[in-house]
Structure formats: structure tokens, C-alpha cells
Image (cartoon, rainbow over all chains, first blue to last red; front, top):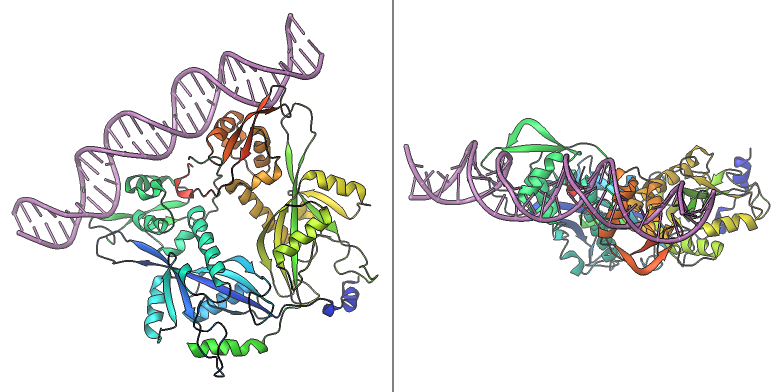
Length: 258
Length: 258
DNA sequence: ATTAACAATAAACAATTTGTTAATTAAAAA
DNA sequence: TTTTTAATTAACAAATTGTTTATTGTTAAT
């Protein structure tokens, strides 16, 4: 019946519609400080920002010029915001399979002076290899990595300070409560490499202690020891390798230790 | 690079804008089955759906008529999607302070036959008292509670099956990994009442066991014993009452027991 | 060739927490 | 007065954690 008839009678102009729908992406990467040989890494969680140009393509003053911003763009009417984020990021980085997750919507009236523009916000995890490369080849004045400690002190465009603050909160939770950390690591990794990733977002003593963590990693159901392979990336002595098993994990706060 | 940026800006006019922006709400409530005196409750997590009318307010054939749907409506240009959800729900229920959380965006092209309509999805937690009331006073053919086990078998409007499936997943996680369970409980509650809420979404043996759970609740940093008050709601014997402390809790999966 | 350095592990053991079963308490109902 | 039942405590073995102290295997320095 009548979905078709109903559709004919429906007046789409009854409501005011948004002036735009964008997909924005907080691009996270983890860099290893001084990567000495035979040393476990020390890592830092970084976020990539772009600097908005002073002038637009027509030579006029750009909106929110010279401020740092997260990359993004308009969503097309034949794709989802998630697909737009993936498309933009993969086109730009030329990497496939980037991990992206939607985490929030920013739609406060007046957030964008150009009109009623709704931002669908995502975070992405990109290998540091790409970003260093990218920064080297470009003129690169307009792209920069910032640590999550310093980024909120910058002069940020639009409501991007709020978006970034939320993204940091979300990725922190996800790193600790899901297996998303795997996206910051090679397929096979040592306990100290995983530990270094987690240390970027927690001070939990059970994670900080080498002995406890290297003992515990063996009993985690979502991590498996790689048989017959070792590495000397982090130590002179050959070191065991682990890999993540694809698995959903939910651990209630009601059964944890405090 | 700035060229690329400028190009994106320039392209703004090329993209069409969405035909609508809606805020939709999965309304959850927990009902107590046969609430006998002096018995700990047995609870069920339910979701409230409305049946879409055959005709709309102007007497025209309604789209997706006679299907079950989650409530929602168009966001106005002077409010956020979150505010719209709150406004609609609080207007309708006449309750203030309802817990609402945004959890996803649904924007797949073609999801709504009326056009390019973006749905900002929320879940809400409403006391069962209201919903029984509401169902009694209305003609009530158009509003119904469904258990989360049966709801996905219904004939649901638009992409609401996906939205509801996601909402169930999110609220399950939140119930176990945050203190959101407090919104299903009175200010002061017994261990067995909290246990009953959690049992609606988990089979974790440490939560199922009365002895373990009543012992554990005493050591949870985000729950506090209420001094000098007891209740006989759940037992003939006077029972201790607890309350939630406002607190963020993150427990890493890497330090849990398995 | 020996030795120092050092990350990764293992060993050891006390302290803590959990799983489990049994006992106790308190108030309503029979 | 006795029975019933949820809440709670007790008790203890089993498992896990925190912590300190070795041990291992390799590189680099002497």
C-alpha cells in the first residue's frame, strides 16, 4: 500500500533543514620517542591537526584562519558520514584498512558561523610511519602532530577543542576497555610494546609493573602467544611475541578489583 | 595542501544539504515481574515503541504506517539533537531529569524514503511507573513495551531494527561498565535490587551469586552503604541500603580476571 | 676472552580476593 | 511456637596479585 502514496503527499519543505553535514576526524598516532636498539619503546599518543590557511582560494580572509583544526569535509548524499571519513582519510594517506570509529555529533547552534552545520565526529588510528612521511614530503607548515597533553592549549577552530577533548576521553576508554590497541601495534608484538601503548593513557600499577604485566598477558583470553617466533626489537635477549585474537570483551566494573 | 583545503571550501556549494535532521530515542525501562512482598525482584529490560498511525496529523497517509517505531522528531535549528531528545521526551512524559545518552548516527542513503534524513540516536532510561501510567490513560493501542529479547522480531519502521540492536548493545555495555544502572534504581537500593538490574544483561557468575555479590558490593569504591536506614522491600529481615557515589570508573580489560 | 649491562622471564612467597558451602539472623506467616 | 526465607556472616580452600630476588641470553665494552 501506500508508502508510495504517503510519500507523494509528504511535504519535505515543512521543516528547516541543516545547511551542511560534515564528517570530521581526530587522527591519532603513537610515536616512539628515541627508538634505541634493543630497548623497549617509550610512546606518546599524538593527534594530527591541520592549520587553516589565512586566505581562501579566492584570496579572501578564510574563516577561522590560522587556527589549528581537525581534518574533515562535507558528506556526500550517496555515502554515510563513516564512509566519508574513511574515504577522505584513505585518499589522503593512501593507506587502506585504517581503523575509524564514530564517537559523537556536534550540532550546537552557532558552532559554525557559516550556518547550521552538523558535524559527525570520528577518531582514526594511523601508523606513525605514514605521518612522518607525510610531514616530510609536504611543505608541511600546515600539518603537525601534538601530544594529547598540549593539544588543548592551542587556539583551535570552531568547537574543535570540545571535539578533541571528547575524542581523547573516548580513545582512552577504548584503549583500556577494548582491544583497539592492536591498531597501534604490529601484527605480532612484545609485552613491552603493548605495555608502552597502554602507558600512554593509564597509570594503573598492574600495567606499569613489568613483572606483573608480562605474567598477566599470558592469561588474557583475547591475546595469544605466537609460537616459534621471537624478536630482538626490544631486548638483546630474544623476546616472545603475542597477537590479538578477534573477540568482544566486556568486563563489569562490579567484578573488578579496586 | 592549502590548495586542497581551499578546494574543499570552494566545493561547499556543490554538495546538496540534508533534507532533515531528526533526533530519535530508544526508551528503556525495567519492569519487575510479579512484585511479591518481601521478595527480591526479578526484572526485565524493556523498550518502549510506538505504533505509527495510518494517517498523519493532517489526515494524509502516513509513511511506514502501522509499523512499530522508536519515538523521535525533527531537530529545530535552535537546539541540539540532545536537547531535542530531552525536550520531546520530557514534554511527553512530564518527568524531568531523565537520563539520556547519544549513541549513534544513522545516515545511510535511502534509509528514509522521504529523502536524505540524518537520525541522531539516543537512549533514555525511564522509570517503569511512568510507562504503566501512560499506557493506562491513553487509548494505548499505539504504545507498547517489548522485551529486548522479542523486540528484534517485530516489523519495525525505517532502519529502526538496526538502531534498536545497537542501543541494546550500548546499554548492555553501559550497565556493566559505567554506573548508569543507578537510573533504573531508587536513590537507596539493596544489593539484590542492583543485582536484579545487572542480571537483565549478564550471566556473569560473580554477579549471579548472592553471597559473592553482597560481599563484593561493600568494597566497590563507587557504591556507599547508607548508614542507619534499612528496608523490608526485598526481605522480611531488614536489609542494608546502598547508594551510588558520583564517580568515573574505568577498569582495563588487561587487569581483570578471566 | 671476560665482564658489565640490561630486558625478559622465572621463582618464590606473602597478602589479597574469590568460589563455595555451611551456619546464623530476623521478621512474617503458618 | 514453628516454619520459612532473604540477608548476612563465617570459614576455608583455591586462585590471583604484589613484590622481591634470581636467572637467562645477548650485545657492547674492556
